[in-house]
Amino acid sequence: MDNRIDWDQYFMTQATLLSLRSTCTRLSVGAVIVRDRRVIAGGYNGSVSGDVHCIDEGCYLVEGHCVRTIHAEMNAVLQCAKFGVATDGAEVYVTDFPCLQCTKMLLQSGIIKINYLRNYHNDQYAVELLKRKNVEIKQIKFSEDDLDKININHILREGE
Picture 1 (cartoon, rainbow, N blue to C red):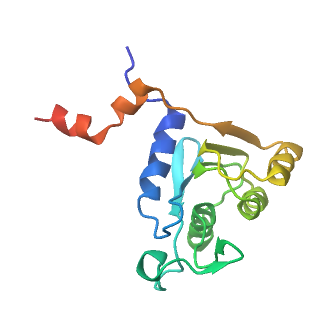
Picture 2: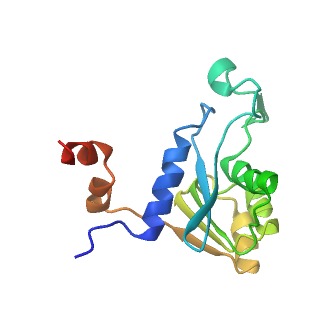
């Protein structure tokens, strides 16, 4: 019997772990870009490298949005751009449904599937745009048994 979590849960768990590096105090988000069941990039929401972080000085809010923070999805795509890794035909695993700007950026970068864990202010135009562009949208679910499998305390106790 295969006691492993499935691929979607595996990659979403990685996105969740990345979210723990977030420096924004309003919402911790992680994203993993995957092609052919291989992670090609990851990101979390935070400030420009070397700049002040929200955890240090608070969020810099303009019209209710933190403008200091680069979203997790964008950080992952920018990592691909920086290191010359193609995103065309890849999929993304993101802890929270992408905002409209990230949705448009993901479409332009060639992402063909968006996997997300939680709904978060889902923009209706973003949803319509994804449908119009035939990008698959999938909410990833975890059962209690699945959560037990990825519980770090459970894993650490096994080795005792």
